Image 1 (cartoon, chains in turn green, blue):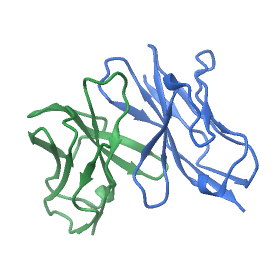
Image 2 (cartoon, chains in turn purple, red):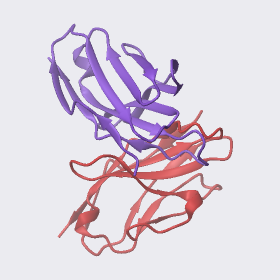
Image 3 (tube, one colour):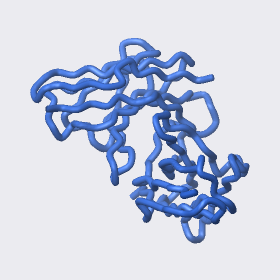
Amino acid sequence: DVKVTQSSRYLVKRTGEKVFLECVQDMDHENMFWYRQDPGLGLRLIYFSYDVKMKEKGDIPEGYSVSREKKERFSLILESASTNQTSMYLCASHPAKSSGNTIYFGEGSWLTVV
Amino acid sequence: AQRVTQPEKLLSVFKGAPVELKCNYSYSGSPELFWYVQYSRQRLQLLLRHISRESIKGFTADLNKGETSFHLKKPFAQEEDSAMYYCALGGSGNTGKLIFGQGTTLQVKP
């Protein structure tokens, strides 16, 4: 069974703080993703990584960066958090060798920026 | 441009009534369509994908390329079906990159 773990479930941060959201998957998946989930907007892709140290911008990368130093771990970084980044953040992974595009999600990290 | 549209934010039905959650997509190539579901306090999980052509928890969805739709249907709704449902589109290339619709909250009343 695929396990995608987001270590921080609920965070409250101040405007201007640097925020790290961590995600770990245990299935040796090559591809990992960070999505943002907002009511009425659905899920929007922030960043995508297809290999260690490789990353690709998604639809809404502004204000975010990512780090993938190890295959199993994909971090989302908010360099200077702002209130409009208050949201639910979802990490997902996908095995590149699979047939198809099914992805597996973590439980999500609720971030509130005050 | 690739796009997924779920026109209903909220769908409210009574237990035992039929359910149809609408999904329309825009994609020039050969699409791969999914329905994901998120129950209260649980992670987003795959409900079904069009290439499997299977029924999960009584739900089915048929890809209609002519109408570019992938509506999710269930003949008799149950209270435990209450959840947020997302339609998603994957393209060729097997990257796992999905485009999601806005989501529809299904509320099944007793």
